[in-house]
Length: 146
Image (tube, rainbow, N blue to C red; front, side, top):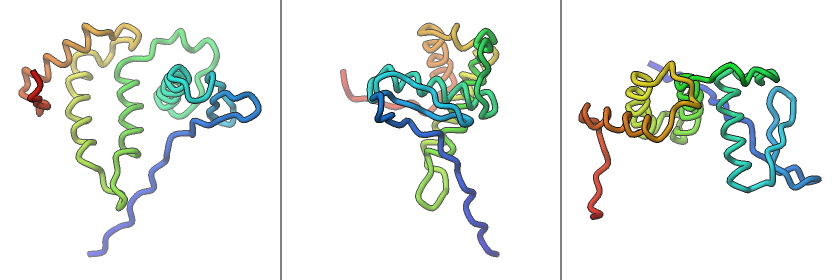
């Protein structure tokens, strides 16, 4: 039996420096989006948000005014899952063990909060997901720190 070649994984659009302005920029569907001063946490957070929205919208730029449509927790999780599948791979193209860890973590998130608008998901929601994981006896990390 011959092994089929590994599938080519697409990388997310690059976070880049716009030399003329010193700002971070990402190009989505041929349009440049400026994110603020390159290298700052705020610009990286804006990049992450734009990429998540872009993935959630089928790799299309959200039209202006579409922000009124609430992005759900499921849509954010789906965008993250697409990213994780291309990022957490070994040099031979096979997935790393980390991908399975994320799959297990996303399950209770989707079960509890999937259709919830992402902007309504806060610290208490995260605690509820963590508690659900503990109740399921999930593979938690142990710590010797006291």
